[in-house]
Image 1 (tube, helix red, strand yellow):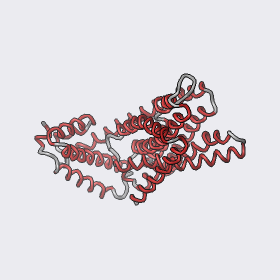
Image 2 (spheres, rainbow, N blue to C red; image 1 turned 180 degrees about the vertical axis):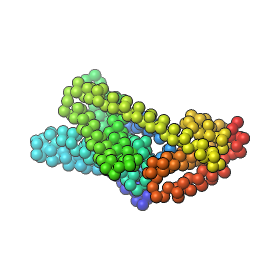
Image 3 (cartoon, rainbow, N blue to C red; image 1 turned 90 degrees about the vertical axis):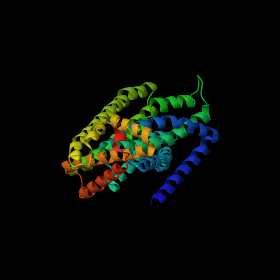
Image 4 (cartoon, one colour; image 1 turned 60 degrees about the vertical axis):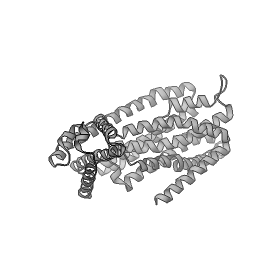
Length: 367
């Protein structure tokens, strides 16, 4: 199945690349790729910063990015082109583009992106612990989608007007609008779905477990439609009003929300450490180096300098197992750990012990 999935992703990606190159030309496509790398790097770095306490498996993050860049993007291309053609036929030439941007794109693009997050929650439940995981997976899917979309938009701007000048809007203008002012737009939209699904997995009520993902999807569609509508139907003043009065405040609230959740995750780990020390799974002297991300990072850096990167990676596995175990206990206290909680605890304790045994001598770690 992983091989089939990779082949499918590659096929979708190559198809999109071929379509985009055919539309704008090879040189413009290369310019688009180079320009699109800058904003996507910023978004990915921010998402990795969010995902520090309990990092998601790298393979799943790559898969999420690939899903957005290929499957979600080609699905959106097919549906939006169809909606545009139907709109032109029913409402007159030129109207289909508006229908596609304001109605079709928000509905189906967010559905295609959110499908991956929902799939992770349904089939890889142990890799989905709450709101932060939902935001991270949704963000990576949206980052991949925006990367593919930006390649085309930047390439088209270069093909039509080059780099631009005082009278034409070329790739520099497109880059400022999409890469500087709004690199987080797609991740912000789809993060609403991630928040909804993240709330769902922690909700004790069956009604809330059903309604939270639906609410997240509707919020994503509304924000997306508002953004596209301001750019398509409104004036420059309308666009700026939506940007500064709606999108920027929501983004700031989102950043504060994520920061609060990171501090909450820290408290969950700190609360679990005394029990781990009492059971002999964690050395008392190590507990203080496990309660903050800065202390963990400094510990890994010190081990890497003294004993090499392999030892630092082993220490990272030890730290990750402790975090996973703390989160499992927290879920168990809430009654949300699932029927396999005992088995998962045994696996995490084994992983902790195995990593602990592979660490360098403890005196070397502490110096």
